[in-house]
Length: 620
Ligand SMILES: [Zn+2]
Image 1 (cartoon, rainbow, N blue to C red):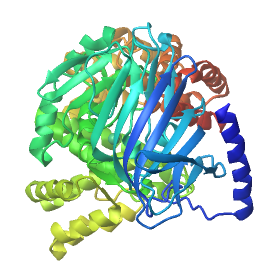
Image 2: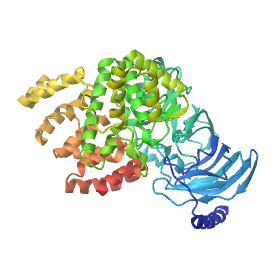
Image 3: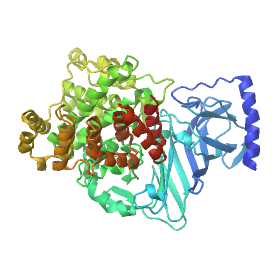
Image 4: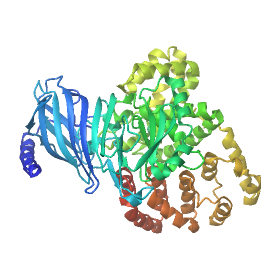
C-alpha cells in the first residue's frame, strides 16, 4: 500500500519535473552529479526472494555535499523506488524524490533533495524483471540441478539496475552489505566472504577498499568452498567443486607471480567463483572474488589463462580504473598485457607467445571487419567516443588486443627493465584512483619516453588515436604454432599426408585452435568427417574448440555436428561463443530460420548482456 501511495506521489512530481525542464545532463554514461556530491560509503540490505525473482533492498549512501548542491542524483534502471529518506546519521526522515525520463541505455535519474547538512540518503527499492544485471536461474539451469541460483553482472553500466547509486567508473566508495537468502543457499559478494553456509540465511559483507560501482557483485546458490593456497580458493556448486579445484591448481602461483611483477596484491584474498554456464562473459574481475564461466573447466587445465586475466585486473581496472568507458582500453589492454606476463612467468615464454599469436589472429579478424565498414572504422582507435552509445560497444578486441600490442610495443621500444619499473610505479602512484588516456600518456612522456628518439619510436599518437594497426606491427611468431603451420602445409598434399605428419598428442587446446582457424580453405563436409572421425571435435567438451569447430561445421554444412551445435547454443550463455556461431548461422536463409528458432528456445537461459547482443544481430 505504501508503495502505491508513494509511486503516485512520485508520478505527480515527475509531471512537475517535465514542466520545469530541469537540466539533468548525462555525462560519462551517468546522470549522477558525482562532481558535486561524493558518496563515501554504501550500506546495503538485500532480501533475495527467489519465488518472485526480486531483490527488496535498502541502499544507504553516506555522502559529502562538497558543492552545497540542492539535490543528489543517482542512476537507476528497471528499479521500483519505494521510498526515500535523507538527513544526518540516525536522524533520517522520509523525503520526496523524482524520477527523470527513461533513457533506453542509461535508465532514469533518481533526484533526491538534500541540504548542506545532509550526510546520509537512504533508498528503499525493489528490482523488477527488467533489472538487467541479475540473472535468476532455475535448478535445471545449474550444474547440480537441485537449487536455484542468482548472479549479478554490473559492468559496464548495469549496477544501477539492482542498486540505486552513482554508476560511474570515475567515482569510488567502500561498501558493506547484509544479505538475506533462503537457508539452503549461500551468498557471496565482491568483498570479504563466508566459506561455509550458515543456518540463519543471513550473510554480512565488507569491502573496505574503495571501488567503482561496476565492481559490486552478488551471487547466491548452493556453493561450497575449497582453499587452493595461502590467500586463494575456489567456490563452485558442491557437485562441481572438486573438478574446479583440480583445474585451478595454479592460481596461487599466478598470484605470487603477479605480485613479483607489479607490486603487492591489494585486496586480501583472491578467490574465484565458478558460475553456471549462462554467465555471459569469460570472467568478471569482481574484487576479492572473480566470477568465471564454467567453460574454463576443460578437464586439462588448458584454459586457465582466463584466471591470469581476471587476476591481473586486481591491478589494472580494480586498483587503477578507467575514469570513462571511452578509455576502456586502459582496463583491458593493460590486463591482457599483464595476463601474458603472468602466463610467461608460470608457464614459460613459448606458451605465452602462443597465446599472443592467437590474440593477434583474433585482432586481425576484428580489424578486417571494422575497417571494411566506414561507419565503424573509428572504433578501431584505442581512445573511443561512445557518447550516446551503449558502453558495451567498446568491448571489442580493439580495447583488449590492440591495447595489449601497444603496450608490447612500448616494452620493446623502451626495454623490459625500464618499462616494468614504469608500470609498477603507475600502479602504485594511481592506486585506488581513476585514470584517463591523457593522464597515462602524460605520465608515459614524463617518466619513460624521455628522449626524442624514444618518443618518436614509441609513436604513441598513431597507436592511440589512429585507426587500425601501424604497418610495422608485424604478426607474432610462435614457435609452437609454426609446428601447426607445418602440419597444415601438408594438407596441400592431401588429408592423409597431413594426418600422418601430425603428432596430435603434443597439441594443446591452443594448437588445436590455430589448426582449426587455419585449415585449408578447400576443406569440405567430407574432409570435416575425416577430421571428426579422427579427433572427435563434435563431441569435444572443450568450449573453445567446440566454438571453432561448429563455425566450420556451419560453413561447410557438416550436418553430423548440428545436434551438438544446437545443444551447445542452448546450454552455454557466454557471449564470446554465441556471437560467432549465430553470425555464421545467419549467412543463409535456412540458417537464419534455425538461429531464430534456437534463440527463441534458449533466450530465457541467457543473461541480458548476451540476449541483447544476439537479438540485435538477428534483427539485421
Ligand atoms: Zn578483462
